Image 1 (cartoon, rainbow, N blue to C red):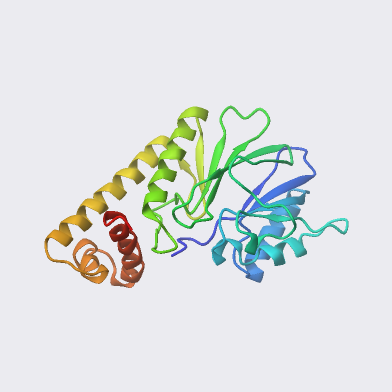
Image 2 (tube, rainbow, N blue to C red):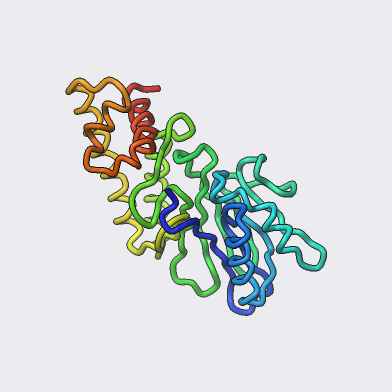
Length: 248
């Protein structure tokens, strides 16, 4: 479900004495050590930790990471939309701009995968076009799971539209996802994501017209060519699609 694992982003600019860490990942000592090694290799200290959302594979290790990254007696704050995963008094809301390590990180609310999902528009000095960190809203491979009731398909589709507008307005260079490889051609990726969701909705609606009554019924029809080990995740997505189609 995490492809190659969770992408933790260590962000800085040349000559900066600090860095920004996005999504420290699970509470896993090996993952934490790998991130700290990258921080050390850049001769920087962690100025702030940002979370795209509160799922454990992104946020569970945030507090332990921040403690391990202490410098000069200071523990970096962990900033997120959800108070449950913050460390410190500052949260994040749509429209916030975080400046650290020579970077400007603009916060974009992109609910749908989860209610607290955020994306981050990243600008550095001399950078011709910004990059966009998408968390689990857009993945490097495949498509994001929108699992009802935590995930809401209507909100997710609106978030994809919003990211398309942002990419068009700012000429975003790359998408930096929460899992999988970096993606070039952001506008094309987002259009493909929206098209995929629309095709799935049409397939689900057709399955219902053909007699499917439950999420499991729909999965057996629509996801017949998918490894059955992934059917539980598919069923969660189908429930979100059914809720969207029935106006729930």
